[in-house]
Length: 630
Image (tube, rainbow, N blue to C red; front, top):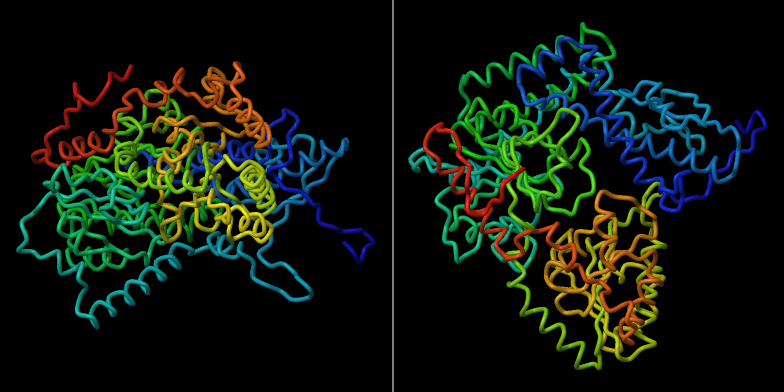
C-alpha cells in the first residue's frame, strides 16, 4: 500500500476506552457478540453436515454442538474485537463510510461477520504468512491454517501417537511413577471423584486452593479424589504425601495416558469412540472442505473421551466435577458419562453476568450461589440437568482467614491508620484490544497511594488477582509506592505461584471498606458476604444482568475519584452516604444462605453422588441444603 502511495499508520487506541453508539465499551460488546456468533456458526455447521448432526444426536446432551461453538468463540472474539473496534473508530471520527480489511475466520460466514458492523465496508483475506521488515514469518494463524487442510485429523493422530510413544518411553525408563504406583490392582476398588485442577493443590483452607470442599473437621472422604492437572498449572509445588493421606491423587496428562493404556481394553464405549474418530479422519479427506476445521476439533474431543473412558472405567470413577467448562476434558467426560454411569457436576465460582459457549455446561447438576444465576446457564440448546443452590462456594474459608486479617489490621493501626481501604483489581490485558489497560490499573492505584500520603489516618490494603498485576511490577508506581510503604500504612497481600490465591475476604476483613470492579465483581461480592462494605467501580459504563439489583444499594461509582469522594463524605458523616457500600438490601439475592457452609454442602452432595450403589438413580429431592428450584 505504501508503494501505491497510501499512507499507512497504526491507529492509537485501547478497546477499553472505545465506546459503541449505544455507549457500551468495545470489549464486552465483542465478547457478547462472539458468543452469539459462535452459537450461530455451530448451528450452521450441524445443519450443513448430516454426519456432524448424527454425531451430536448419537452422543446426546448437545455436547458436540456445545464443543464446536466453544472452539469457535475464542478465535471469534479476536475477529469481533477488530470489527467492533473499527466500527467504534468510525463512529468516533464521524465518518460516514469505513473500510475494514479483515482476515477470514474459518467458521464464520461473511454474512455473520458483516452483520457485526453494518456501517463498515468489509474486505476479507486469507493468509498464513505476513511480512515484517522484509522478512517472512509463519504467523500464529499457521496452526489454524494447518487445521483446515485435508487429512488434518490424521496429522492430529500422528502428533498424539508420537506424544504417547514419548510418554511410554519415559515411563519405561523410570519404571513407572509414584502416581502410577498408587493405582495397584490389589487396592480395593474405592469409588472415585475425578476433577480438573483449577487452583493450587493444598489442604490449607485459608488460601484459595483445591479441593476447597475438603475440611479437616469433616474427616477423610470415603472416596478417592483424582485431580487431573491442566497445562497452565503443571509444575506447581504439591505436598503429595499430605494429599495422599486424604485420598487425593494428582494426575498429569502423561499419568492419565499411561494408566489408561495399562487398563486398555475393548469397552463398548471405547469402540464407539474409536470408530467415530476414524470416521472423522476419513471425512476430513473425502468430505466437504468446509467441514475440515470442525472435524479436527471433534476428533480431538473424541480422542480425549476415549482415553478418559478407559481410565474412568478401571479407576471406578463415579462422578466428575469442574468449574472450567471450556476445557476439552470437561466435554469429553460429558460424552462418556451416561454410558459409564458417571454423574457430572459443574459449580459456579464467580459473580458471572453472562455465560457464553466457553462457560455453558450440560452437566447433570449445576451448583450455583442462588436462583439468581440459573438463567445464565440456560439457552441455545444447552443447559444443566438441574440446579442445586449451595451459596457462595468459598464462604466456608472466611473463618480460616480472620486471624490473619486481624493481624494485618493491628499492623496498620500501629502505624496510625484509623480507616482502612481495601482495593481489588480486575484482569489487566496488555494489548490494545483489552478492557483494562496498564495505564488505567496504575491510575487507580496511584490515586489510592496519594490518599495514604495525604491523610495520615488512612491505611491501604491491596490484593491483586494475579501476581503479575502487583503494584511493585509497574515502574510508574515505584516512587509513590515506596513512600506509602514508608508510612507503614500500606500493605499488599500476595501468595501463590501464578494466581494470587489470597482470598479477597482476608483483605476485606482487615479494612473498613473495599473497592472492586463491576466487571467480574466477584471479589467485591466476597467482601460483602464477609460483612464488609464494598464498592463497585464502573468506569467503562458496562451493563449487566444485575444492574437493577445494584441500583437498589449505594455501591456503584463511575470512577476511582468518585468512589474516594464518596468515602470522604461517608467518613465526615454526610447523611446521604450513610449506606455507602452496604449490600444488605440485596445480598440475599446473591447468596440466600450466608452461613459459611457452602463447602460443607458441596462435600455432602459429593459423598451422596460418589457413594451411591451401582447404577441406581441419584435422588436429589428434599435435601437439607437445597431450596426448591422453581
